[in-house]
Image 1 (cartoon, rainbow, N blue to C red):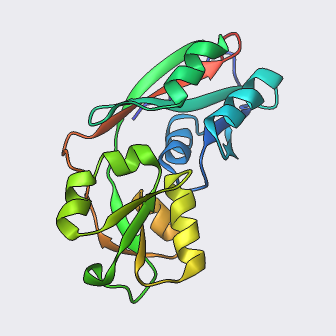
Image 2: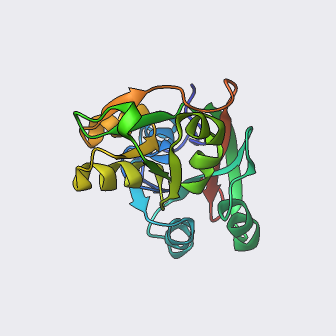
Image 3: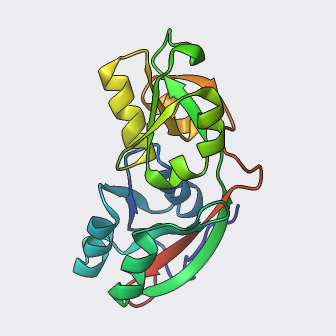
Length: 193
């Protein structure tokens, strides 16, 4: 996938905000699409947008729409209200993995934690497995919480990279309900990145 939004005169790179913990889909997007920028994590979409508006970062890469669930809220509404410039956009495939601490078995999992948008993309699969969805602030943040707890009945729904970051075992890959599950990310700037 081609990098997005780099002007011809940008030699140095900068800092790009994203919502979530390291290993989140937005973190992957910044690494893949803005490799010259330092990814900077924020716990909420509000905080990422505020950092951009204050000048703490030069741009933000934010998910706004998904082919399975529609608008990603509250991100889409916050962007509309913020008065920022959309520099570019890109659709990225989203593959969800069910992950848990080492030794966990899929039949023992009672709950799966993740961002509400990710949970909405795999409700059918979780239902078939008899796993209760539990909302968290972020996909990778949920993976970190599951790893920290060490409870073999808790799992996270997150990108496979989060399993590597937080040393979790992947119980099942591609648990998204749609094979064509994609998310549109927009690159935001105060006046053009």
